[in-house]
Image 1 (spheres, rainbow, N blue to C red):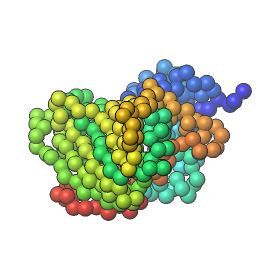
Image 2: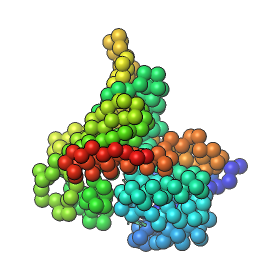
Image 3: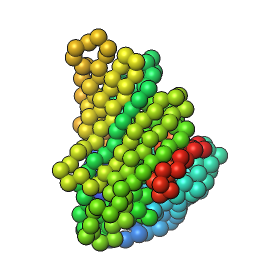
Image 4: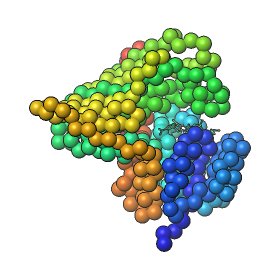
Length: 336
Ligand SMILES: NC(=O)c1ccc[n+]([C@@H]2O[C@H](COP(=O)([O-])OP(=O)(O)OC[C@H]3O[C@@H](n4cnc5c(N)ncnc54)[C@H](O)[C@@H]3O)[C@@H](O)[C@H]2O)c1
């Protein structure tokens, strides 16, 4: 019988609920330790799973004898958790975006590479069969133009300690493009390859009356890819009537529409009257967690679709778009 893997979680908020729920039916794992700056939040999970609660990631890594860690922290809270995993050589799955500070993320990426540590970033949509079907076609018929992003209603004022506390503050979340559209940018990079430069503009001052709100109301970015392809990406948290999530990619003979958060695919081929539809699976978190656990158990990273180094490239592009908008459309060249 396979050994029971001891798992730890840093950040005991919404995403730790999501991942522990996604793995609820998995065999041969034990939720062994939970960490949060607020001990009471870690204690709720510790009680539920007969696990240990910590407030310090370093202590948790030193004491809990873990096989793998999930880092489910807000973008502003990174650094210590990753360094603790590196020090103790414990593989980690880190939620997107991997940071809001590119320099710190680049240092962690270099340390991960030097240590040869197994990592996985929470870009769950890469595990969808719809995205894989799109990728297979685009490898033969490369994407030339894409557009996509996230359009949502204005944020709510809410619990200042919870997601509506940090999410609405650009210096904590990085802004909507960094925190949410990161999913679309990651998929675009998966389907079109790495980007070369970005130019962006932002709208501000339309959303009013939300305490501590410093995000852009909307952002429009034009990206040039190394392949020569071009794309338009957008974020809006000022669309009161809604708008949704999508990514469309167009090639000489292929049109891909990834629709909604589920990323169901509509695949159009030149000369055909109807699209082929590929449905997505209901719980991509479980697909991602299973792939990471398999890699931890076998030591073979082949099933992991986004490593920390890959997450760094997505972070760079989203931060560069945000900076370009802050510099009123100055084109930003990408390094990674
Ligand atoms: N993959 C997805 O679809 C998806 C969906 C939602 C959120 N996320 C990402 O997951 C991450 C976490 O989001 P969330 O919804 O769980 O946030 P959350 O606010 O619900 O929980 C974060 C927890 O981290 C704790 N925390 C803050 N700083 C800490 C530190 N230094 N050490 C230990 N604990 C600390 C907070 O007290 C809180 O309990 C974010 O980066 C977010 O962007 C991903």
